[in-house]
Image (cartoon, rainbow, N blue to C red; front, side):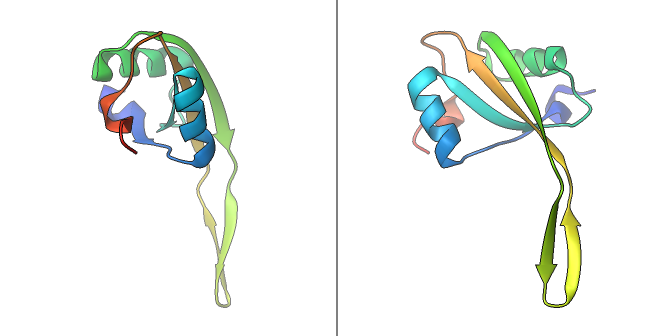
Length: 95
């Protein structure tokens, strides 16, 4: 799997922003097929940072309704990545 396919997008929520500021943790949406070692290698290669820990969560499907039509959002995988002290990822700054 390509490094750019593993990391999909940052997850910017209140909870992830507080965690980023308090304990140097970033939250990313990743490919559901990627394992922790692949996520660690991708983050280190793309952003030139040292990763201390990777935790993953499989987020469940959610049902959405528009009028009388019912659909489902796909399930996805979230990775919580702890960075070494003093390191950060630039695109999170100022968010």
